[in-house]
Amino acid sequence: MRVIHCADLHLDSNLLTNLDVQKSKERNLELLENFQEMIAYAGEQGVKAVLISGDLFDTSEPSETTKRAVLKMVEEHPKIFFFYLRGNHDRDVIIGDVLPANFITFDDCWKHYVCGSVTISGVECQGDSLRYTEEPEFPKERVNIIMLHGMVVETMECKSEDDKVFINRFKNKNIDYVALGHFHGYRKNRLDERGVYCYSGCLEGRGFDECGQKGFVLLDIDEEYCRVNSRFVPFGKRQLFDLPVNVQECMTSIEMARCIDSQLEVSGAEKEDLVKVRLVGSIDVECEKNLRYLKHKFENDFYCFKIEDHTVIHVDYSDYVIDETLKGEFVRMIHHADIPQEDKAEIIRYGILALAGEELAE
Image 1 (spheres, one colour):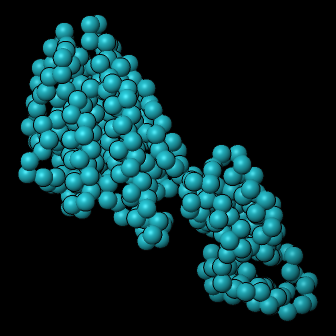
Image 2 (tube, helix red, strand yellow):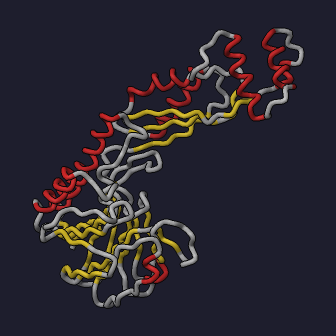
Image 3 (cartoon, rainbow, N blue to C red):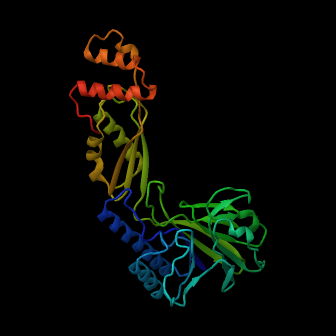
């Protein structure tokens, strides 16, 4: 028996942080299309069940268009059971009054469904509500999968405001696989001698805190011997890259561009991807750095390109001690002025640019 474990699709997301209105709409359609393509893959691979471990939607009020599209996809694959456990983003969502027979939901009490010799169980948690629910019995002779959405914690004393999964409570309970949602990267760990717990990660990265390859987990279940083998399947349409680029040795924007080029080549980022470059390092106060030039140089090479300046400015005041030019006088004046030390380098930098007739805006 084959099962897909996915989570955190966040359909109908607000993607305007990094994208303009048009690309935000386009990207949202891609999130929906990728879900559809995953279902098509499930059909081709003989998958019996798709486990959606929370945050199918980004909001409890997704558009009617998106809800109807999801239900249509489910209806078109009647041989696949879809197990949908709501997460913290879509906790109060109402998809429709009448759901397809193969679309199975959970609530805040444990529910159990049988697929052959596999039992799929789940409960929707809020905050640390899982603390107050009693774990059911899981028979040793069956394959036992549970679905949960929340942050895995080791002890009940954790102060996080996230929905919590107290993972130690599920050890030595004959559980083979814990299908988790909430964390947006793939992560699998040993639960006990028998089972594992796993975050599938999100199906598509949306922001630069969700970098790397995204996808789902495919479970191959040997029902006769109660064994579960799982592997991550990369499936994202686009990848996101957050690249620190050290420009400490650079004195010009052209040199910085070369450093960015080198880092992009190493990263493997392609034209359809989303890239953020962070300039880092300590640069000389007289370094010529033009962010608009750098953005313009690379922005047409990728679906989305952003550049951020995280450099710090270094001033070697000894270089200006005997400098009799206006620039030297200006640097010495700021150096001895009653100004917070952290502001002096920035003031000197802009002053030098102004004296040289350079454009101040970056």
